[in-house]
Image (tube, rainbow, N blue to C red; front, side, top):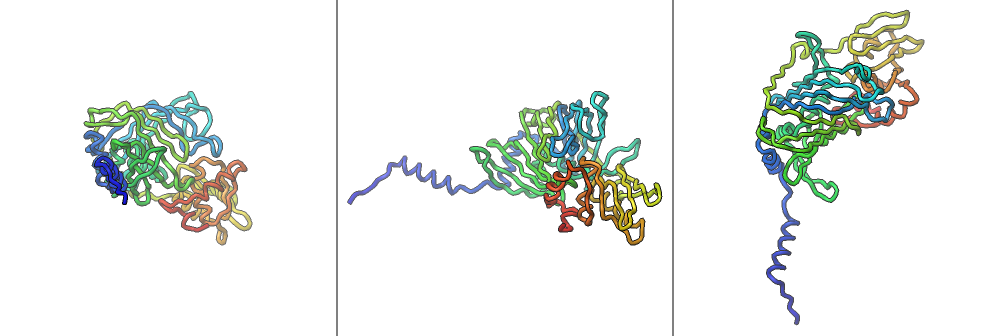
Length: 386
């Protein structure tokens, strides 16, 4: 009888392979601990103020449907984060870097757009003069996404706050660790960690009134020691939304705050107001917001020209139009063009059963994107089942 023997070295190697194959997957607690340690102290920051400059793009303002968002140059971009209260602000000065595309932007070469926006406690708003503020609910998902995904520190804070789940995924020839979490009604996100535990990217999905579930990817590059926050911080931040770039930021300064943001009283009580003004027999101007609509009486229905911004505005405008003539309701909505501020209420109009009229260029684009779900925050179209 032949006997087979193994050397101690072979036995050790075989045992190591078996144990490696049976090794337990990392837990969320272990990954969070590793990621915080990799930042060398900056993960303890409770607030952050990040300033930089670079290039960007006007999300949703493409020259033609399916084209990339038009280019911008940021002379300054400042973002402030309070990771305890979940508050966020953004302040910027930016100018066009190409002549085409929309948005509230000066024509190329004629100056910069300057703006400030805030978010906290489910509200979004902007200054509207000394001591005055205007609500911007359509901006809330984007600002919440930026709060929790555009710095490694805020992404890890969100992962802890919202009980992230550990996982792994293949990227090329590597297997990377991940942490995934959801902010109810606002976003889903996955942090991708490198072998040191540093957050290299956050892939998220946020709701949008035109695109539905919208993919966002934020990359962190060139980590370096940053004395003001006592640890590492990326010196370059890149972001894409809806499949196209929106930001390539060179970080010039990072501080630890403080960041004190409170919700103004008038923002807490905001509701959409539709100011109905007769314009001609059977024609009404529907104002009261940043974007206007027109209602036109036909023999069998009301035609609405423009359903802008988001569900809240669109449904308020349609409700007002439906009260204009007894027995007649909005059955047709005319869209002037595909830019997201003018198209943001079209999903709601479809959900209400209206027929849409738009350009031949935009028709296939809307047909495709309206088939997207809005699962993070189901909108009127998702709820209607249409």
